Length: 150
Image 1 (cartoon, rainbow, N blue to C red):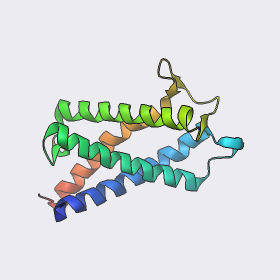
Image 2 (image 1 turned 30 degrees about the vertical axis):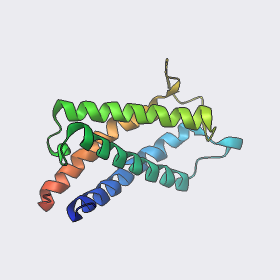
Image 3 (image 1 turned 45 degrees about the vertical axis):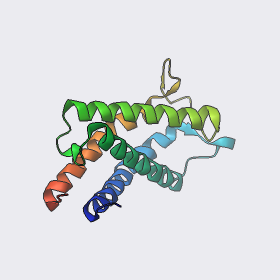
Image 4 (image 1 turned 90 degrees about the vertical axis):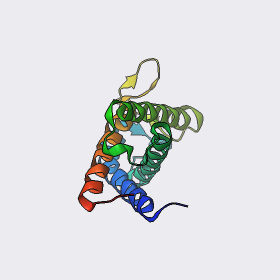
């Protein structure tokens, strides 16, 4: 069972992840095309941000296991950042491949820069490489400010 403090930490992490990912989703929505040429509306970006929040929770839990520390994000060091980048890349590539080539949930507009060899969009890959370290930095700030110890 989750401790009260860990539970609170996960709620804050999820909220931060959704809030930080939403503006990115809105901006990059111009780089996608939905089936039938439908425009990506704001509520789709909200839904995508919630999924991003769940992915950040997954990154948190896998990182805890790989690094072996509950509060690894307070002092991530080179190992912590390497784990974040690796997990962000793997998750991004997997989600994009499934959504674009498997499920056909969306497609890239001609404006989307594509990563050669991976054949996925640069924007969603960059999102999962740039935003998780920022989100975990914000979580560490909150942790220290609130005196959150567990």
